[in-house]
Image (tube, rainbow, N blue to C red; front, side, top):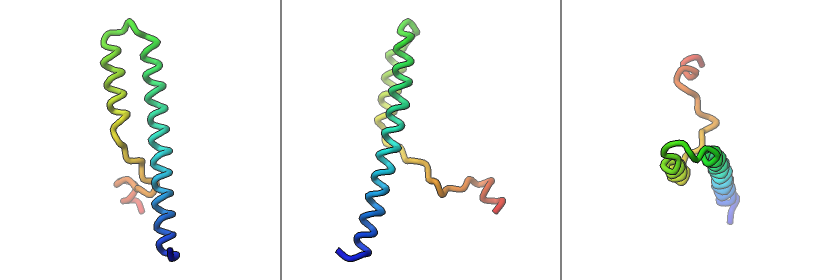
Length: 77
């Protein structure tokens, strides 16, 4: 393996690691929300809300890009 291939693999591995950390944080937040919902079981449609949160937690999400500059800030540069 040459240096360029190694660099590409390292960048890819870092990307995969960052994505996994982001996903695990999202899942923890959803579990906390579900726990809060279970503390109020007499509310209407609690099971539906829990199912909705669980389904959406399983959908893959793209982590925010740290280099992204919103349009209004882009215009100021």
